[in-house]
Length: 151
Image 1 (tube, rainbow, N blue to C red):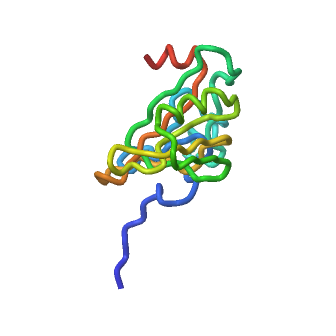
Image 2 (cartoon, rainbow, N blue to C red; image 1 turned 90 degrees about the vertical axis):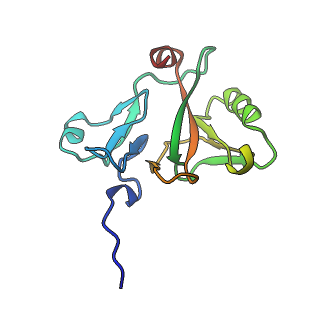
């Protein structure tokens, strides 16, 4: 029998909605850029179950954009849409047109990437990946004011 060491990030939704789990971080959980803990008290007690909420709500005005989060396991596919034939650029444009779209990514990362995945609800179960070749990038929609802070 073989036993793998326990890795908290392997537990589904360990960091809650809109959180990101870092395998080599201490503490393991952090909020995605542009988000803050839903419950600061519980977050400080290392209870991340309530996840993170947006610092600035989206309002679908000009200036909203996307922050690239590099090298992750993509979030769970709970409330999503996909198209096998779209490029990443087309995916971005389609996501910007839909005020409910909160993130997008390539569906297939082989040979430079293809296809489009778009998310419409909370992003659950994002994990930083340190295994070369299995990581992906995701583009998180942020308000114009949050985008300017990240630049």
